[in-house]
Length: 167
Image 1 (cartoon, helix red, strand yellow):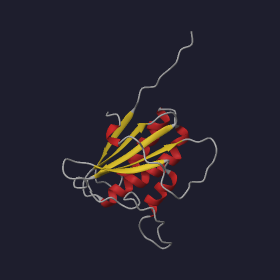
Image 2 (cartoon, rainbow, N blue to C red):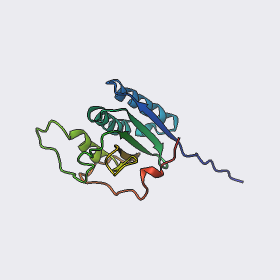
Image 3 (cartoon, helix red, strand yellow):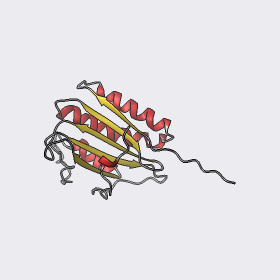
Image 4 (cartoon, one colour):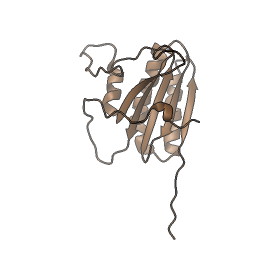
């Protein structure tokens, strides 16, 4: 009789201090988690996406922030960064305009929208939406064939990041 192996859902949360070394620690942790779960093919894309989100949290929030990494199916990972700043940056605030050629800000999150399979934002906290911070999240998946990213937002997910498994 054939047997099947089912991998349980997995998730890791890394709480990061206001320290300029924290984005590097987050990247190293992400790489280790992906390799441990057999997702080495996703490391480059996931590292780019996480680096942009974590660096954005470091630069624009005044408090601690966290990186959340969880398996989202076969060769698919969700990455979320929660911070204390309620401001939702473009392009996560429904704007997908390409930054101007000489723009000094906005390029990193624009890259996120180009390379992520899906992406979005979820206001978090006990107060009104947008008062207590936010969770920026992305998904990436390994594709055997090489594809160039399209310059448009991906399909919005059916579930909320609040439905993610807790660790």
